[in-house]
Length: 137
Image (tube, rainbow, N blue to C red):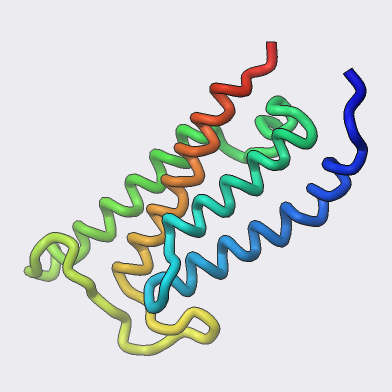
């Protein structure tokens, strides 16, 4: 089968842009529309585009961790964000905010941590499922 050279070349330019946009959506999401879920979907789309352009095995080599580990880490981060208020005598999943705003990010608190966990969870699960469907023989 002859493969096109256009898609791999376009992917080299599109993938970094999509990943930066996904981080933008993640950081914007705790105060505006967007967040961990949408950002995770965009990042997973960039990774799947890479797998389509090159091969699923090339994506396996690119990923620093197994997608299941990424999903598990995201789940643990989200759970931790819900448990932090319990240690302060507040109900589960109560938002706790740091008083000072950070440059670029703005207000940071447990909702931001929750969004980060959802971001990694969505990336891990979507990439894991799609790589299972696209296994190389």
